[in-house]
Image 1 (tube, rainbow, N blue to C red):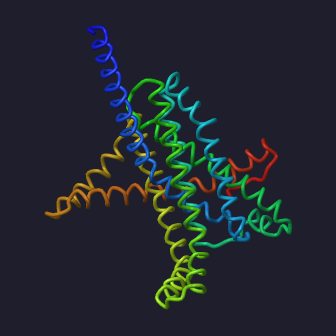
Image 2 (tube, rainbow, N blue to C red):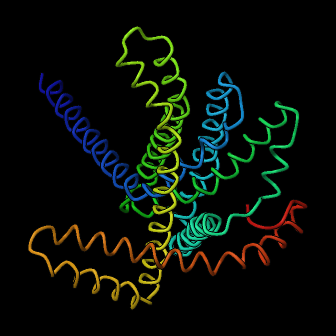
Image 3 (cartoon, rainbow, N blue to C red):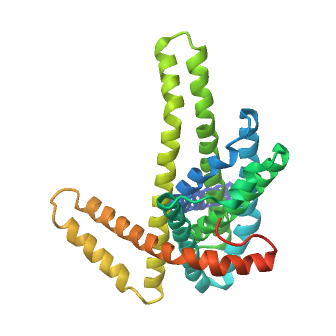
Length: 323
């Protein structure tokens, strides 16, 4: 009997440790996911464009193919690379984060530049000019998965940096949980977004109730505005997150004057109010991080289009320039 009681005590202790581990993983995954929020928003804002121009019955299959490619990127390629970095080259995490942050700044600034100075994109025009829907779908899916790889790399690196020091297994499970949850959130949300106009059309034409028909018409009319707003939020999030990553990276590397200056300015604004000082400080800091991200991105645009793009094109045999 004493042996059985001892065994039960051991089982209970193991269960407590397992429950604590699950709590730790869940907490770390939630923290890492929150850190990657800006990239996630942009990912959700960018993806709907890949189903533009296709028949309604091809939209969800295309999104599903991109989602599978995204999971492959995160779990099969990037997760092992992240664990290798964490184990053998932890000092490389901050520079890689800064490179990814600079890329986000470039992407966000390029969108702002395109909005201010509209110009045709030859790659996009060639993509739309093809008369073969099968080839167009294959090209779109491949392009989406390539873009997702960059964003997924940034997400996984941010998540790795946000995970507290722990065992290799805990880090692996946490990163896998983050990758799966973010992929489900992004592409599940995208699937809902791209089908909302179909839902609105169904409500407007099939419902017997006038109120539901009116709501359906409003949904159809409102989706372009919603998508435009989502793209704007995504761009702002890219600049904010990218700028903050680069600034924080400089602080880690011993160049913290810019981060301290931004914090002082934010604190000065927060001290002018009695209520909501913390919120004011956060807004000002996020705005200044975004301004820095925009400035850095604008500097990177000519470098990317006239230096890095042609070099990459020469190595890969592809097309130079920014997309």
